[in-house]
Image 1 (cartoon, protein in one colour):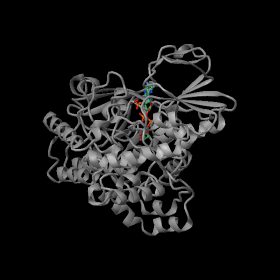
Image 2 (tube, rainbow, N blue to C red; image 1 turned 135 degrees about the vertical axis):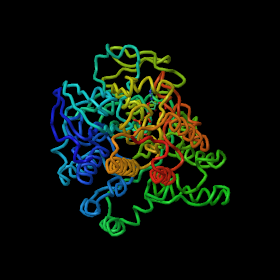
Image 3 (cartoon, helix red, strand yellow; image 1 turned 90 degrees about the vertical axis):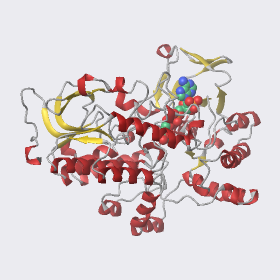
Amino acid sequence: MREDAAGKSTAKQTDAERYDALIIGAGFTGLYQLYSLRDRLGLNAQVLEAADGVGGTWYWNRYPGARCDSESHSYCYYFSKELVTEWEWSERYPGQEEIRHYLNHVADRFDLRKDIRLGDRVISARFDDAETLWHVTTEAGRQYEAQFLITGVGCLSSANVPDIPGLDDFKGDWYHTGSWPHEGVDFTGKRVGQIGTGSTGIQSAPVIAEAAKHLTVFQRTANYSIPARNGPLSEDFKRYTKEHSDEIHETMLAGPNGHPFRIEDRPVASVTPDEQREIYEAAWEKGGLRFRSVFKDLLTSKPANDTAAAFIKTKIRAVVKDPETAALLSTIDHPFATKRPPVDSHYFETFNRDNVSLVDIKTNPITRITPTGIETTAGHHDLDIIVFATGFDAISGPLLAMDIRGKNGVTLKEQWAEGPKTYLGLQVAGFPNLFTVTGPGSPSVLTNMPVAIEQHVDWITDCIDTLLKNGKSRIETTPEAAEEWVGETTAAANATLLPQANSSWYLGANVPGKPRVFMPYAGGMAHYRKRCNDVAADGYKGFVLS
Ligand code: NA7
């Protein structure tokens, strides 16, 4: 079958370039998926990437302070031992620029660039049932065809700029953190307004405050944050991570969220309140997402969660000197870690600066943007620059931004009118041979992303290999399997406190009009991997191969 696969650029009746597989996006997913299909299976695969460089999320997110909250020795590929050994991270958490260097290094090291077309944004994909072919069109009007279509479009790549009246009239400059100018923004002497206090806003505020004349942070929902305790990695630690890379990887694979640390097997109630405080204190000093791992029930028991929440709120009040500001920052309406928990470098300390103020837009919402600033129900704020740290139309957004049509011309938008429905986050019923890496219904954003990505890419690669070796040409999930999986995804979320965060982007609640469905699979990465493997071993149960 593989010999039958069409060669590169063998145009038929149309001018379309023909491939075995097309991959959308040249981030972590696209690079590894290309390597896997091309170098492992020998397929003729092509990556189409909208940006002018590789890097995906890390190509676009260049805002001040942009840094990953996974630790650098785990935020990378593990498929190649040589790559793990030769690459050296400089800091505990990798900054945006360093991650981009890393992904460029990967592209060069595995000679991937020749099969990546940059600056070619996919706008539509249509499945031809008779030919079992995906027809893909890009913004530039180029046409492509392929038997398999794999999306590696990322979960956080469709910028959410809120529809606030008056933005067009603003005389200053405005930016969304997710599509930041490559040349940077000079804040010197400027009055800056930042809307949003999620992971991004919490990273950018301290850096903007250092440069700007004045920074006004507009906060709708107060947020927890744990100090990152970022810093240069010691030579000893670098050596340790290389010498123990197999063990580290095993730990990442064994846990629920792909991080290189284990979750302690003790509930909060198993220790006294004094011991709890000591444990939280030590975790606070250590910093980072590890804070979540000190007890096993922080995300499943509200009373347990309350102890962590109370500890962090006390810390915020201890750091922030102005009592009113401290109260605003520590009045948090959701349990700890039910929204993606940020890690920060001096976020709360930033509010002790003379040139920083906090505006409560929950009590006094923004009414409009004026030519000279932002107006709330409590007054006007004069601004030269507005920074929207307002997040993304997450997970399903980047897929729905393309016009994807499956069998009988049904659009993905129609198929997902009530919210995304997939089987295992990998496939949509009625869309044969379309694979959605880290799609809705998979663990994705609840994990350390490269771990989730490698698992999906490996599964898809094995699946395509099996298909072709068995003389089949298509794989498609059934509506029943997808329906059941949506049920399982919902049940997995409901077994945790995660749905209690009302305005979370996990739920799509941050985008007006988006159906409220808990999108990522919360049953844990290790459990999910086993499910996917069992499905494959069981003859791809829930899929039809033909
Ligand atoms: P998030 O986590 O979605 O945060 C967006 C922030 O912007 C959050 O504080 C929102 O408040 C606020 N927001 C969004 N829309 C508005 C409007 N219309 N008015 C006022 N405030 C608004 O996005 P991030 O970019 O910070 O982080 C995304 C992920 O990237 C992060 O979790 C990491 O995984 C990396 P709200 O809470 O909705 O009240």
